[in-house]
Length: 498
Image (cartoon, rainbow, N blue to C red; front, side):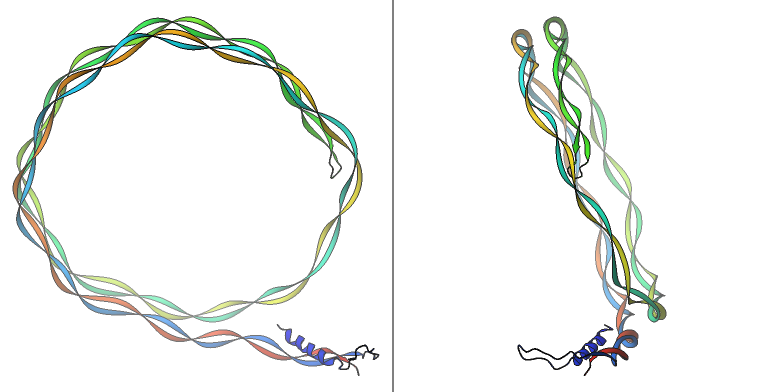
């Protein structure tokens, strides 16, 4: 912005110095010679911006707290107590024994031996030979001459000049005035009246019914059927398979690494690569054949026999017996008492205070600088190279190989066995049960109950609250402004000679 006014002045002077005579006829040839140009110094007026400070009055709104005391009337509910006699119904629990007869159907097991025929499948091993055909890819290598283009990198240094504008900081100290608020504590005393409930205790005699548990032993006789185990030895024929080893030869195909020389088509360099080539070998292995054999074994068989037994049980039954007991009960009554107490609280008031501080202000000034840089550029130069490349081609070859595998055939066989079968027979039985039933018997009881009722009462209270008011205040503040200042400078202007 500092050079815009002189540049405009220079352009206006150049426009005025251009000769006014020109050739305006179409097709005419201008034979006049160009006049000479001279550089003449002239004094021009330019303007530059200057930043200055000034004090301006500003209106600031401040919050001023103020305490307001008001009197209010409130209605308070005061409790009143009185004794009333009431008749209540109390239920007593009386136990009673009930005997009941039940009929039930029990399932009694009956066992018998039954002969059954089962089909058992035996596994018989059998060897199967199979012939397979497979196509294998056999590699063939041959040398081929090829011409490749190789690019070489040639470095070259380039120097460049750059211009940049840097912002240089300038610091200066400026004094400013601030308003700080200090908190000043102040103690306030207040008097309050309150109604407290003071407890009063007295002893009252009451008659209560207490139930005592009296234990009683009951004996009962029960009959039950128990299953008693009986063991006996039984001879059975079983098929056992024995493993018999047998040595066979198998053809196993595995991969073998073979070194192959290759040429990189981009760089023309030779390198060695390991490739996998399939190889078939004969390996001896052991195969186990399952040979069945009949073996007679003695098996211990368990059978259950029902036996009826009688046993006696004892159980304890607790009966509840009522009993009258006179007890002394401590009764608490509350009496209202009015009391006066004083409280203290601290209130903080905000007091303004002017503080002058020195602030460091930073301004940035543009400075033009020139610097030189160097960078290296790599250029790719092509070059023709003749190389011998080893080319691998795969040729399909058909081969035949034989495999062996063992297959197990399932052969059915009929076996007769004796099975113990259990059948349940329903039998009806009668048994007697006893149970205790508790009955609730009502009776009337007269009791004295303390009843509380609330009575409205009007009381006066003093309420204090803080009200904040907003007051305007005029403060002088500093502000920065920009002013254009004229100055004289000498410039060289081109002028055409006459």
